[in-house]
Image 1 (tube, rainbow, N blue to C red):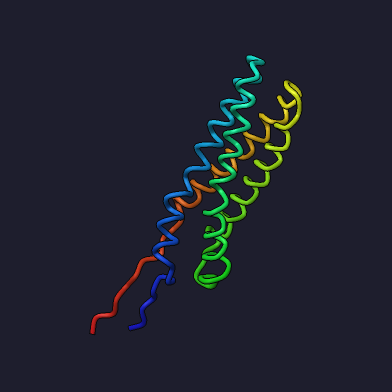
Image 2: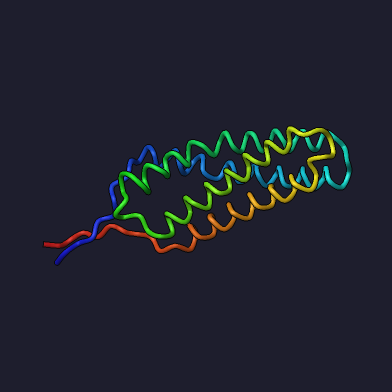
Length: 147
């Protein structure tokens, strides 16, 4: 009887990925909340806080994406599912939107308002879709042949 084994992935890389992957989502959601608060209050503190949150989210987003890049596209390419690939692209699009958002936050004062809110919302929606997609995807399990 043939068996199907799950692709071999590094346990250390999986542990680091599992630890760091949810952190950027929290920073980007907090950045969205700060951007909305800044749009409604015009208190500069909220805009600066959103800028820092987005920057920290970007810093924490790099390592999980590099691990995901290696696991999905290089080492386990033939075992990666369409959901894995779509998760990678959605996260990459969210990071690109967050980079543009960080650039928008370099503008003066209230000039950032409409664009920063939309870019923060886009980032959060893309990451939420990616997280939902990975939560409902079918998983590969190990099976063992009995002799």
